[in-house]
Length: 581
Image (cartoon, rainbow, N blue to C red; front, side, top):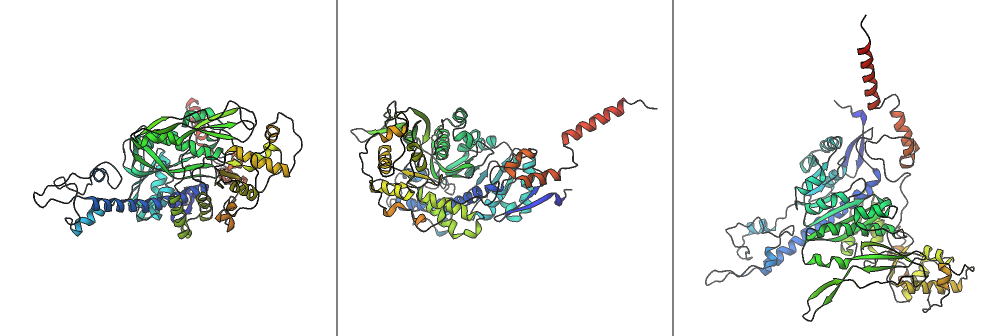
């Protein structure tokens, strides 16, 4: 019989879980942002899925062939109708009998039969790495219209904790959530295209789960994926990143956005092996991780355009100039058919045309859109309409607001402070710099990844011309002639920058003074030790001195299991060796 005094009740949203005083099952309070934004995306996905289903039924109704009155024969069914179902899979609807014709006219369908045809099964969700089951429980209790939620873990203690928490959350959780002790990779491989949503939130890299996860998502379904190994993705260990994700990272100011794009390129690579491809709807970098939400589709023809969405990155080692080299391109034949060809290159000379230094090359990365602006606006509107149901409303609404104002078709970004650091000059205000870019005829926006980051479609030559004009009015001290800043400033600008304030120099959120980058709500807001790891004084930077000291005092007087077992074995051997009197 377990003592409830050993457990702490943790409430998040509408779910409650029992957490043992020891670090037996992983739980991180910081991930409330992750869970909240996942619930918001899930709600939008269900809404969009219903809309797509209705549109498909409407298309089927209008395109259904009429039955000939003379001989009762049908025309050939529309291929696009036969090849679609509620999940987008290539099969016939299960509700239609094999003895009936594939396409039924609106007049031939009775009201009751029409209702059956219009039924869409609730989406099935797989949480591949559930730990305590908090995320699965929140999905089941908070997302309307959701179907069965399957929670997996290969740790026995975690599965026991998950099942205990399912019972603790009442009948709704018991009817919708099921927990299994299984290897997530094996389970997903043996359940191909069975889940409308697959959620991967591992401790570290998701790379080993991607191949099986791609196969378990139904056509038109969604894969939610988190990566917390940011040191690897951001260039700390480039060779490790290449071995895990197939891309080489660069250590620029844009490294966190590059991490997002490396993860997307890796998912696309796994999808292509099964004639599938991805469509990102939302990609977020926040706290200590990146999280992407992509829809999975199957199409051998659409898959051919993947090289058009991938690029290598050339980063100058002397200045902030970077350039993208697309992997592929298209060309039209005389009969208007499209040919897929290798990309033209190189896009840069051997030495940087701005400062004369060499380039580092990274990638390939996903250079297509990382958000769907329609989805982002829908998610943001849904979050604002239900703000009381999101514990981390302030943070996720700020992130989504910033994402909604990003330029969707501009990969990576510049740092104004880094530009000024290269030239050793004072920095213009962000409004002045943005105004100069807009007045030059280009677009500019912020980025959710970095408060000082600026996305723009202006070429690097224009950016440096703007900075040369700024330095003319704000002189700098003389530098060594071989320094990158000296080489850049030695040239006269070909563009005369206009720093007059432009109307669009502030985004709508900035104009309304909406908070976009919020501080952490408390100290030590970040990653936590892996479950089962003994808490020691070295974890103070992660947990804080108060939490560590409290945990250590709780364990005072208790010997570790291994030490206790060893002591008992020694005592037993001593008793056996002692001769009887």
